[in-house]
Length: 391
Image 1 (cartoon, rainbow, N blue to C red):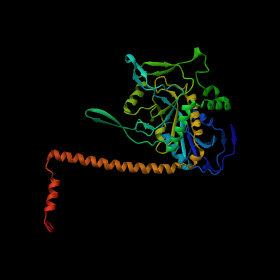
Image 2 (tube, rainbow, N blue to C red):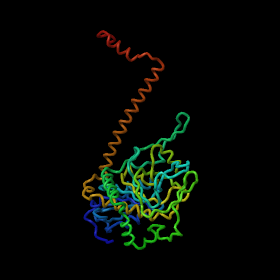
Image 3 (tube, one colour):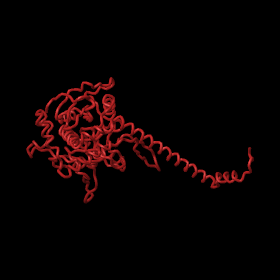
């Protein structure tokens, strides 16, 4: 990779890449085709404490930020995004790229034996996609717990944006490319590891360099304690769907599956800890390399490779995006204003419907007290009244 002078002006940087953790940022920066100096006209807001990296990936100029060391979760992610917006309001596209826990899901197989519903494995990639009435990300710890007919009911609260339409349109193009040609970003990983030899041992596939007798299985814990052992996947697969997000670090199969049960009608493919803090202030595409299953076997063995796979997918994605279309896209500030206006309209419509429903409930109660229609009788008397009566 070469280090070159910066493009002319900070507004040349149209893509913001948030890499939450150290390994996520190292993997992300290894994707730069060239590194840039900080733009001379960049004015960092006084409240913005982010440390930025600047570089080029293909035809795109990218600025990269991460969470402060030892901080994680939706609140820390929201702080980073808001600070970035304050200094770089012209950004057109956002990416959140890091690692997460894969959720294959369970079902009863032949002879009532539990089996996995999806073939999600360590080293795969999960990408957010609107589904099941969500925008592609759901915050699973933002709920209301109430009682209904003697049963405890858990209801999802809050509403999270989806990624912008232009982001999802480019995603369709990349998915079509992968359908035709298969996953195409292994060469991107090889190129990064060649450029940065220091990363070769720690960011490569953790099992493929081991002799067959020393390779450890890919272990998934079912909720009933059963362990499913699979051979590690040599080449990553990509999975699209809902990403579940919260401030909870989940390391128990029972707790994980209890969360999935509460998300009635929503079937996440991944759990992570930052996306929910971004979607309403920094709508973006969420890309997560799978490094564990949020169960008792959670460890760091796959974390750096998963970060590298996620970064490679994100770079492959950017290569499918027209730089011209990104430049013509809406600035993040303008996009959010449009989203806020839409939310206000939805809230107004919801209030109208709720008021109408309450009126119907009141009428039903009055009918139960007395079926006589006093309103109709009053209308009749008014129409029969002689002019001047009652004045």
